[in-house]
Image (cartoon, rainbow over all chains, first blue to last red; front, side, top):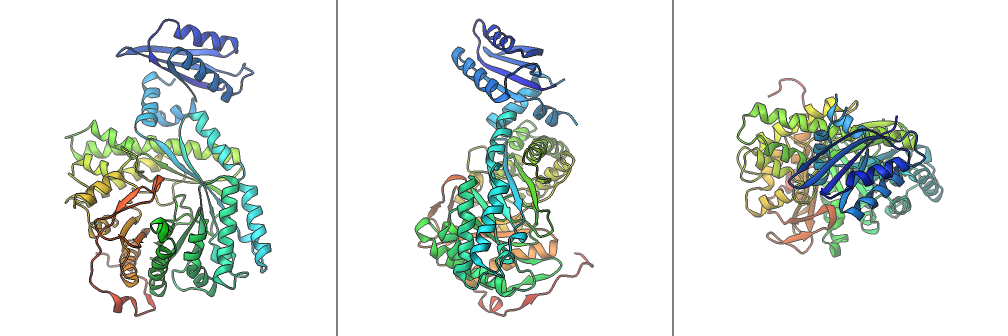
Length: 90
Length: 454
């Protein structure tokens, strides 16, 4: 499974999750887990997604999501899961 | 499954605390390029390096993008050129020609430094070794990206004092050859005792003869991450302090291990080692000296500095060793002056002298690093400083090094600006008393005894 962590950070506004999820659905990227908090008015979201079924390559998805984020005033970052696994799990 | 707090912690380390992978260094053996015809040799070297490294920068960028971790440098280390060029080079200019070949291919593949313009002369110098050493000023002044290193001693062989004397002169000459650029050539030249074969960091990286044909070595870094972690345990005892450094070093090193494995897989080159070094940069918040201050010193150089550095270095290793399957290179905290804002501040405040730095090198890697001294410092004085540092390495069975820059035309109190990652440095005073007769004796210092340790 090709697991990717997507993080979204920025000023809270209506429809952030909707826009990101729409993009993921259109590209056949499956959401495995999603969690979200608001820290000092800042929207913090983390998604674990699986892009096995998607035709997209990682780099294009990262670029397109970053651009989508810019459009709604948030920073969207995509990283492969291994960096977190390696750092936080023995 | 990974939780949100872990993700936030990792990304904060990267975004706010300057966590990065400092370098992916591709080691390439040039032994199979040897030819007695200089131009054939040059062509083979160019061909082999280009073929091996053409994808290095691209792969580094791709890994960086996939994991969201900056990989600051992509570099190449080659077999010491004194060995490779021995059969073909008859003059200093011949060796400088090989330096030019290395420089050109470094530009072609896009790496910012290529190391290995080196000679290993711990016990004696061959004719080629000596020729290469004498060609260093010319080579470093006519190339941009070539780094040079000379191994002058080891615990097993002692110190080659003839070479130490020669290097004092070569450093002076290199400073003179590059005086238009504040003697920048000396920033690309380092001398070692017990030089490791698999060091990924410049200027001392070379591909040792005990290594495979090609190898990937990775240097991690993260002084800012350690400093931030220590801010959270202010006032706690040494046990808590050490545990915190260890855990942080573990996390930092795991990133290096991941990047090394990925680079190895994508380039189809075996993974060598991860170098567990805390390597600072002039960026604010990326300083080893700041960690020492966070441990409880007013400035680096204050009483207690050597002990603080010793514990820092040891804990970084203890945490890092478990995080990586193979550890090597220099592995320790670097204490360069010009590349570390906290060290620069300490020198400017009068807290840190050359002598204290020397004491600090007894407990950490790697040595007197990026230290600017007055341009009128005598060659024999430089050799004396080198001999002292080599002796520390030889007796303590550790790697030590000297990268010292006698800045032509400048004196104590002035500043020298190298730019970029090399930063700037205040010119430090040097002990004015002579060691001429000591240095001029010639010969070797015998290897030390390995028993009766005190």
